[in-house]
Length: 52
View 1 (cartoon, rainbow, N blue to C red):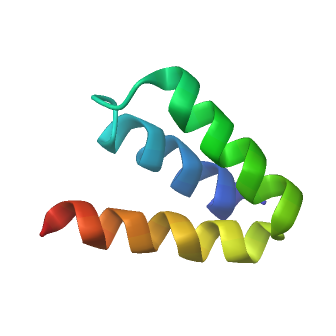
View 2 (view 1 turned 180 degrees about the horizontal axis):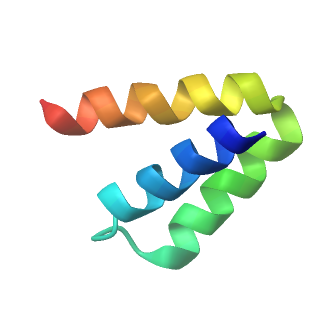
């Protein structure tokens, strides 16, 4: 849980320009559909995509 929480914090800070409402909605949808491990992988995927 600590690793996932840290990844979430980094994800929120890195994509801070995004509207907070949209980011919170996205996280909520992912939490409902996927588990914590999948959420961690999705965040890393967004992070790699944002680096392009």
